[in-house]
Length: 175
Ligand SMILES: O=P(O)(O)OC[C@H]1O[C@H](OP(=O)(O)OP(=O)(O)O)[C@H](O)[C@@H]1O
Ligand code: HPA
Ligand SMILES: [Mg+2]
Image (cartoon, rainbow, N blue to C red; front, side):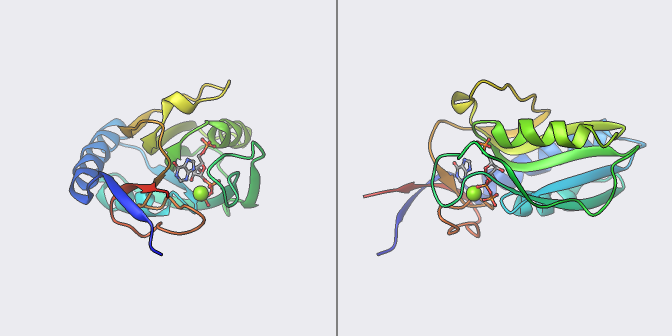
């Protein structure tokens, strides 16, 4: 049976916000080249939409990490499934994520990436769920939406690998 999905953020709301954040980032990075790092798999839709709207030069790389497995709770162990192809030395890195939830993935990643001597590292996320943060605080430079503590899907976010392709953000209403 199909799950029922309640819309939290419409496609139009997401689109409008990405336009705004892309304009702000383009302004902040004027005169520089942004090295976008897409965190697979969840970050892929947002990264593409953001990248298309940036007006400064952009290069891109991809990294795949996983901490959630098939459930809705982070395992706490972050695994690098696919590392970056390019070195980061001297680059102005912008990490692009779909969501910061417990903060475990990003606090781990930022430490790993800083060791590679980029010129700068900033973080951009489509969604932030600050209520869920465990111990580690993560500094987020660009947030499109702050959302309540609900498990969301769509725009790259999955529930057991499903619903990444929804063009909006929704909440799966179980049972
Ligand atoms: O702040 P946290 O609690 O660490 O959660 C956020 C991370 O979890 C999800 O990825 P997941 O590990 O499920 O991999 P996926 O993107 O391939 O679905 C999401 O895409 C973020 O990367
Ligand atoms: O709310 C969420 N939805 C999907 N994947 C996630 N990974 C962390 N939080 C979430
Ligand atoms: Mg996931």
